[in-house]
Image (tube, rainbow over all chains, first blue to last red; front, side, top):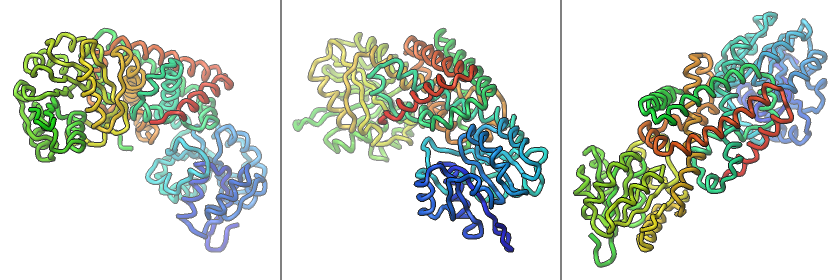
Amino acid sequence: VTDPQGAAAVCIVGLGLMGGSLALALREASGASTQLVAVARRPDVLEAALAAGAIDEGTCDLAEGVAGADTVVLATPVRTILRMLPMVGRYARSGALVLDLGSSKSQICAAMAEMPVGLQPVGGHPMCGKEVAGFAAADATLFRDRPFVLCPLPRTAPEAIERAIRLARDTGARPVILDPAVHDHAVAGISHLPYAAAVALVNCVAAADNPVAQSLASSGFRDTSRLAGSDVEMMLDILLTNRDAVVDWLERYATQLDHLQSAIEAGNEANLRQLLAAARYTRSRLTV
Amino acid sequence: VTDPQGAAAVCIVGLGLMGGSLALALREASGASTQLVAVARRPDVLEAALAAGAIDEGTCDLAEGVAGADTVVLATPVRTILRMLPMVGRYARSGALVLDLGSSKSQICAAMAEMPVGLQPVGGHPMCGKEVAGFAAADATLFRDRPFVLCPLPRTAPEAIERAIRLARDTGARPVILDPAVHDHAVAGISHLPYAAAVALVNCVAAADNPVAQSLASSGFRDTSRLAGSDVEMMLDILLTNRDAVVDWLERYATQLDHLQSAIEAGNEANLRQLLAAARYTRSRLTV
């Protein structure tokens, strides 16, 4: 449904935090000039999104939702995206941009390479999130000023890449073009490793079964462990589709923890001060 | 300086985040009925505190500040507290309550046991903080609704313990009486370990020297690494005076990280889901 003024039909598959926020952001950016269609499993989520004015149409049927769109955005957990790509390939109209919002990109871009020739696939990953899931947490400003990684395939037409860049900009994000493997290793370090660190921290305190410790937990523990509250199925998919990079970072992390432990055990004050000061300096330059 | 209405003179040694916040909180709670004296190394900090109305008097001389007080609160890094306790013992008036705000308690309480018989020592640790240091960050509400750990010594008179409890309550905190070793092991888990985890995370990303990773860092990395911005000298003292407990928790942490890594490497979905779901459940019950 591309009208004479260039109005576009965007189909968002999945109306959780990311898909819901994308719908709200595109609605704000383009108003009625973009026809927004959503596909979700649960009719009540579609009704909530319709009531919020986030979408124009909703359906539980992937084929129906995808058929009329010139841009399809897959906003589900990574392994659901992998399962849906062949179906999207079957139902999407020729020339459609197929974008996703999954947090690991190598496996998704490999699956996108298998889609019918007429389609224009681009892997995507907006670098933002919350530890709360679902449409109720959706937020039109979620993408604002955040990097939005785009991984075009060798086959993707320049015009389709431009459309993906425009969509990312419409959300208020900064598009960043990256190779899928480069993306996956980078986000394993700054996103998947922090998640694993938070999970291990929480499980460590729980395993100690120390009610005193739990009763004394303060803002430091709260913030360091925040990511452990992330959606389990989403994170499971991310870790399992980005295994090599995550394991590489877990090994680097163990090395750094060993450095700290050695310095503390030995009472090596100079060495310990250096490790703490280096971290403080690096952290102070963080601009997020 | 105890007046007929029971007005008390409190001397706070150290006007950083904790000492400064204590001054502001006691000022709010007791108004002019408490004479607040502060000891600080830097005259400009004393002037700032006087200008803010946080204290009545300031001095750079420990002996002078301590001499007139019936409560002395040491609010410096832990090893400075250890160095100052003998001097406080020399200068404090008989019967004075000597409290500290240090984050490890065993070594401090052992040093307090060596103080002159007439003094009333109580180890203290309010469970709150920020990753910013200094009087400029001081906040009268910092202690509000937070646990305030008190570690009386076997020799401490009940009346002095009551005074410490009252002081903790005056800050808006919830006093909690604990054995120093129990405290130290508990906070090593919920405070010192999270700090070490944050330091290792930041150093890990810095060591990888991956500009892409750093440019993609988002709120997840920011929050998980927040504690790495803590004051280095303060944390150095804490880690070095609580070595055994911190090392014990670092070993527990390494075990939990191993569990995660094994499940990810093996692609053991059921096991991995269990680890992530357990962490999410525990985290959801956190009340901080």
